[in-house]
Length: 119
Image (cartoon, rainbow, N blue to C red; front, side, top):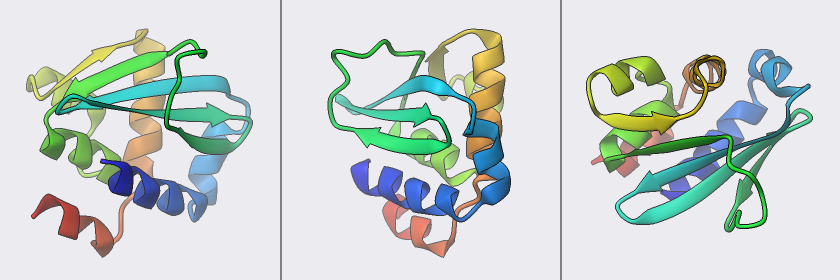
């Protein structure tokens, strides 16, 4: 999953319109849980940071599910709420945070490089 997150980080940096959504965020931390692995993304003042460990930070949102579902979210192929409603992902976060996160991931469209991780 770490490789997929790194590709997402590269993609978001090339999308100035998405960076506008995160420029005023102060430490929005997302915990991604997939197949027993936990990874963390933090959105802070226009930057997106991949954290290996976030034990000392408050997690704003927990997202857990199967690899394919997490990848669909990171790629921007599926909207977060669709994945939640279909039972593919479980999310613990306030509704407004879910909407914001959905916008960030959905607007950060992936490139063809993502396909190699799904196969």
